[in-house]
Image 1 (cartoon, rainbow, N blue to C red):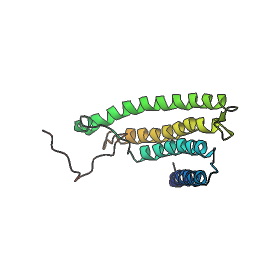
Image 2 (spheres, helix red, strand yellow):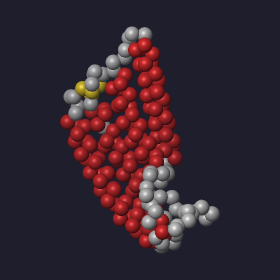
Image 3 (tube, helix red, strand yellow):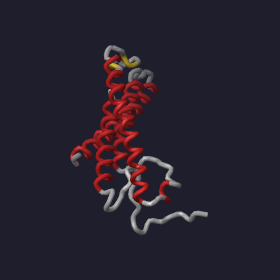
Image 4 (spheres, rainbow, N blue to C red):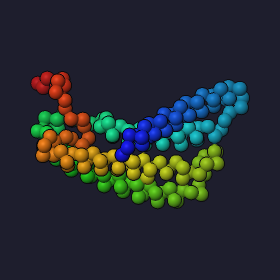
Length: 172
């Protein structure tokens, strides 16, 4: 994907997060003055779901998701890359399934209203197929990159490749 798309995704996530902060702040101030914004909680929750999926995609692209690699990082690079490829394909299958099922759920929720806001609940559930599709595209690119470099210098799908000079903890 293009760098412009990645920057746009980051800007959108930042704008949504800023909107959440401003909305929650305004709701608190208005409540203090005795005029609560009843719909503000619903809109903040809706925006938070979208921010979570955008952030998950940005973290996957940077290979920054939390992982427990105590045993895996002791494997040879080629073995680790193959194991990551197998796991990547499983995760990709899950993401594609979630995209399809999330789309179906979104279509079922077109008429349903989200809380007191009057907004269609489909705007909330649409974050699932859109977010999972973005994650699937990112993961597919990382799997293909690992496959291309498997013979020359294997690189894990999910974790950043170790760099020369990285500090390794002492194993008892």
